[in-house]
Length: 116
Length: 120
Image 1 (cartoon, chains in turn blue, red):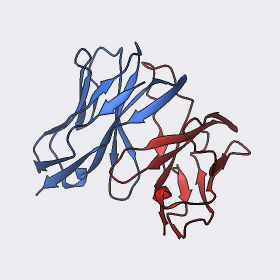
Image 2 (cartoon, rainbow over the protein chains, first blue to last red):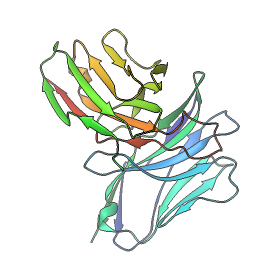
Image 3 (spheres, each protein chain N blue to C red):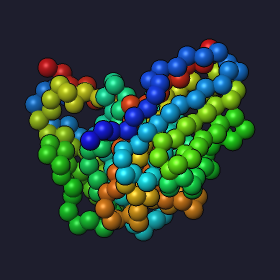
Image 4 (tube, each protein chain N blue to C red):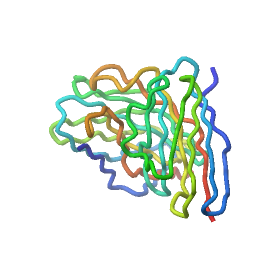
């Protein structure tokens, strides 16, 4: 079975500062994929960034980067230069095998609030 | 390009009543997912379709929940009868392909806005 843990229920960050959202995972699969999604108050989940377990370099997408530490089983999201529009729920997710199926498992999320 | 469309956005019903949710995925996306999201939690998969075939319904409570995707495009999720504990957001998502081997392309899922169900 696979498991995603997000230990920060809520985070505050000053506008224009960087913030790190923590994510740890547990799996026995030798290969897997890791995702981060943003969910604003409107409810729609928005894909932000992806890291494959065999990718040698950490993924980056604009202001988002994924700090992937395979030995520690962590996949933290770093948002640089925070903006007010970054205020939302952020979910870490992992794609791997579960119950004989390939499926994506989500964490419980972190609520980020950007302060002007 | 239109995203994943869901309707209704909100639904309020009394317990024991039936309810149905509709989802139209992104054009060309063969894989469709229905998720349940309780307040303060991440989405949990209910069922996954590849074209018209349900290939993972292990988490679907089959005594009261049913789903269909007859022509391999849009899909309907039904609850009959609804219970108080079914109050949640029901999310639909689609992806171009089935979940690929991990480590390959992202093949990310695109989500709709969800249907917020309140059972009184």
